[in-house]
Amino acid sequence: MNVGDRVKWLPTGQEGRIFEVRDGGIVAVRGEDWAVYDYADRFELVNEPVSGRDGPDMAERTHAVIDAAIQWWLARRPVGWSEAQHLERPAINTTTPREAQLASAVAEFVRHNEDMPR
Image (cartoon, rainbow, N blue to C red):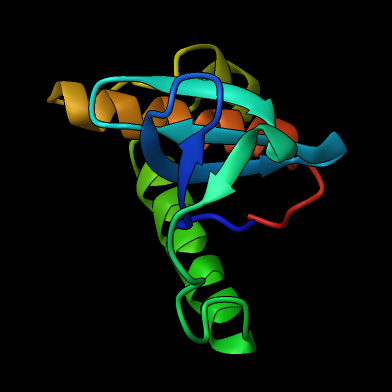
């Protein structure tokens, strides 16, 4: 199972899309008005995987989106602030709830990928 796959959560029959795959066989699935983290074997694939999603082109596109999101977030860091200060208040200089949500998601990614160049 991969990010973007449509799945059915077996305990309830609810359908959603995988938005994160974690170590240990854990996947995160989001439906229209619900989300859950559970083991992959508790989900059933509803659709065939999207053609080419796992190929090198998808990896390049994913990295491009991540890089763009990080650069967007870095551009909002106040002058003189350290990365640690920005991670404490990731939504500084955002103007909408969606921007604040994106800033928090980027900060969470940065925290868990400290070795990634930026």
